[in-house]
Length: 625
Image (cartoon, rainbow, N blue to C red; front, side, top):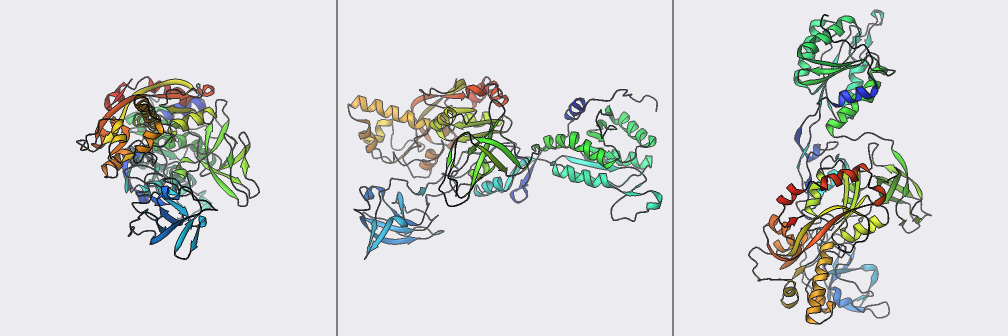
């Protein structure tokens, strides 16, 4: 055919990969029902819209009571209580607790309003009409507080997350019924060649007919890679029909794959259609099997011509086409179902039962796979999402030492270690930064947790707002304003931290691991110095100081629900939720990198993003350089 573009030299595999990677075969974004979400890939971040659990619940069977009334209880000197009722799972508490009273409670049941702890039944005895408690408990002990699994406003899943049964379980817990996901690329499959017969049709072997292997095998490969295969009628070697089918497929699909005849007439048709309505970019690859491959553009669709022989066609598809479909669909590259690694930290469990330990994977600076335990309790759905697989501990093993070699059974063959693994402070700007990265994993364990994991060499980064953190390499950060979140209009006239001590206010605090908690403690220490009293005297005077909630939005949401008069939080949180805000101070949030992993691509990508956060700072109230 005159004017045909000539390809005298075979392309290298690298050139073929690059050529296909430059083709646009993305399917965009679509909404899917939760029930149909398995295997889909999130197109946007999903934040928790409610606390899970949505109420304070008992972690065990036992008795709900007031923790302060158990102080001093022991095996030799138990404390007596009167049991005034029972709370079963799925029922609201129907009794109020007075001094010296307790309520029998089932695992997972709602804690009564006046109870702040529970005692397991194994640590109690009955004597006539009395309940004898043989141990002291602290506020919150054996209680899974609202939001302990995942808190409202917390980043639940990020864009690019592939949804499996684990993620669907978490989304179910959050009440999500429809999700924005990557639309599957539509891949048109066109078979050519007079010798081919569709399975199910009668085969005439005497005429050299064979069943069409490539179309069905390729369609299966497309589906496995995350695409949506569309099979078109068999065109044979009829050039007019071949041209019609190719044009129809190009108009309806993101990518067109053809396979079958290698006759000169078939190749001429393909060249002519592409020359008229697209561009032929590559013809032939220096790879065996699979040399006769075509790559180009056909109208608005990408086009790849696969070899006719099934082994060659599938080899080309698996090597060059499937990765491109996976990228377009947001799917990970497949891997073997097990991986060898070394424990990044120790793990201890009681002997006597075989233990399947949920673990995550991270790659250190030398490219070695490290394995770290992931366990937030059997009731926490996030444990599954944050884990990559299972390490089995036999019944006679109760300890895995740091550095010990282990085999991880992956949850699925396509599991990959995150490109960036971090632990630390919960922060709204950080969530937005993470959205810019490719497959990061970040665990909200507070500033102290971030420092500890970084110091132990587990993570790539730690994020901390504690000023004296002497660990890691500082690669950037920001400043955020913190204070007390109060109801809109500040009805109690709260002016500062001193009011928590002096006034009858119910306070909602953050855990000791949180950098915000440290900032509050420092402010209380300064107040104690001003008044020339001990800090613990101030703490004892604050109603609710020791009973903490999970994420940075949790205290504000408790205040909004009427469960507190003031909560520890950020100006950004107050603005987002429509609360009042009493400023107390500001704190520096620092991103600290593992010194041995500063050259890791994920760390370098984050460091680059940290130099360009001005637009984010402008969007979030109370944030600055």
